[in-house]
Image 1: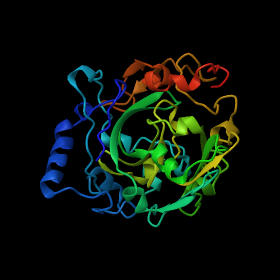
Image 2: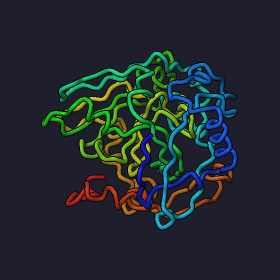
Image 3: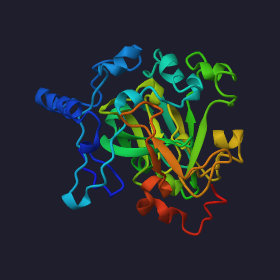
Length: 334
């Protein structure tokens, strides 16, 4: 398994809430033998809501991130798993934070198909098992900053998007990468009703520049906290772009298309004066209705605990990604 060399903007396992529980579970898995990513302990598509809190779903054995003492980042506590899986924006299942966990528990993730196509030499389709077997899985601990000015710190499991793109061999015409969420109104009540789904025209779509998509920090996640993604968090596969606001990290992806021109994106279509294509975390550019200078970090307190911290440019990943935007006016290109 690949051991990723982290930058100082990343976290280690030692910053996980309920560390003893997390490490004891890992120790037990090692005693039992390495569990392959495709081994099903409990189906994500069949588990009841209680199962997500009782830790019964499929687990992964991955190599944790390694740091030298001089590289250790500042100590910040990871958001507890129970809050990561219960405090979500996934309008396909409703607009309230508790709607996704309430309305997604019968969501079927297997069978699944992810199609990669467009300006590439070798288009391909991945099925459910391919998502776990085609690429070495890594654990990466990233900050997640919501445009609503709250944030979490989450241990994701997944693989680099650039590894997938390398397999399909983008052509010289591939300047952007477009993404599309599953469209299934029978399973996703927000897609069946504009009232429930926040007035969005589905399916949800997003996009990145090709250099953003190929950046080593850009992750396709298939799990969190060492287990398969719950449906409310974007099962079976979602995007994670840690230096951008969370709405860029599209969930339950069924299509990735390499294209020549900037693609439409859902929130930019809905409110272009509020949500730009880039959506880089930027404390100096306010949302039209609130400041982005600080955020409420969700940690061990209640969801409305006053854990207020200053927001960092690029969500603290500037050392790694600022060069992508050299010469670009980040106030005009918000």
